[in-house]
Image 1: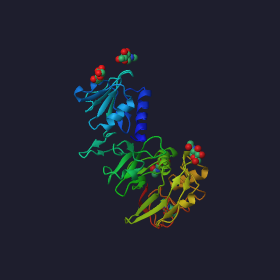
Image 2: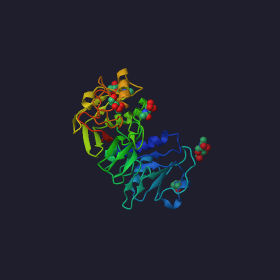
Image 3: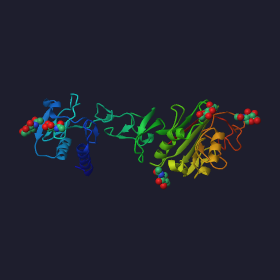
Image 4: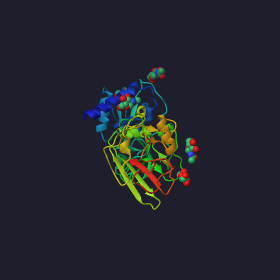
Length: 341
Ligand SMILES: *[C@@H]1O[C@H](CO)[C@@H](O)[C@H](O)[C@H]1NC(C)=O
Ligand SMILES: *[C@@H]1O[C@H](CO)[C@@H](O)[C@H](O)[C@H]1NC(C)=O
Ligand SMILES: *[C@@H]1O[C@H](CO)[C@@H](O)[C@H](O)[C@H]1NC(C)=O
Ligand SMILES: *[C@@H]1O[C@H](CO)[C@@H](O)[C@H](O)[C@H]1NC(C)=O
Ligand SMILES: *[C@@H]1O[C@H](CO)[C@@H](O)[C@H](O)[C@H]1NC(C)=O
């Protein structure tokens, strides 16, 4: 019996005995309590043994070891069952009565396959779908998400709550940051919208989610730009990291960069994100003239990937001095995508 397993049983015991929410689900890697029930709600034909004088942990360990044990009730006796509860367990009981536990098979809506493995959903992964992926790159390793483009929950290491992200799985698990394909989409958005994210097909992930993802492990930021002839340009910023909200999500780090678009972001390290309604006067002016939120400095920025998809012949848009779609680009962007992986 490993220390991890015992400590998970201890965690289970603690969570049960300090819980006041009798009917809330308690999930653990080895067992879970779908409801807290009395013995009468488990069909007696499934009862396999009845031990007295063992602790909850000993009872759980015994059931874990016994292949024929799918569930147990505890208190005052430790009773093993070769089946799981079939009736609706909606009666809340008090702590002097027995507690019911099921051996976890597939958790969180996962479905068991003929070979005994779990087929998970919603961003859950692992042998029993017992935890969320940290980002789309991790989720792409599992067959039930491979090659799909979909919204899933993720739990970056430093996040306290799950976050909803959009994944493009077929290229190895991209967590989508920006997708701007239609010129009519308006990226002149408020601070609150850039912070929380907006859109679904045409979308921006949101700076808070970006901060959580980029600070949970080393990630690279990618831009893909297509011109009207569908020529594809790909620029990468390795080890890209931004600060938190109190730092206005300033660019903190860029390890190196590569690609045909020319540099732009390296000059913006240490500068904050700004929108028309948030940032210093220069930042708000830049957001106005770029018609988008972005990281800005005294000359605004040499690139404007969040800007409007207008298509002037000279590569400059909106007649803002210095404002080009991207420094080394003399074409007008047709579609823009960004992702981290
Ligand atoms: C378990 O055994 C004890 C002692 O023999 C008995 O009193 C109790 O009713 C049994 N529990 C179940 C659920 O059969
Ligand atoms: C708790 O359960 C015991 C045993 O069934 C019962 O005697 C007692 O009245 C219950 N207490 C409450 C508050 O329901
Ligand atoms: C975009 O949205 C902003 C803020 O709501 C608004 O002021 C602006 O007029 C919109 N631009 C277009 C082209 O619709
Ligand atoms: C934001 O990050 C800075 C620098 O790491 C830190 O000092 C500050 O406490 C953080 N603020 C919040 C609200 O987490
Ligand atoms: C930029 O200025 C030129 C000349 O004043 C004008 O013809 C053009 O329409 C302007 N472009 C935009 C996008 O406003």
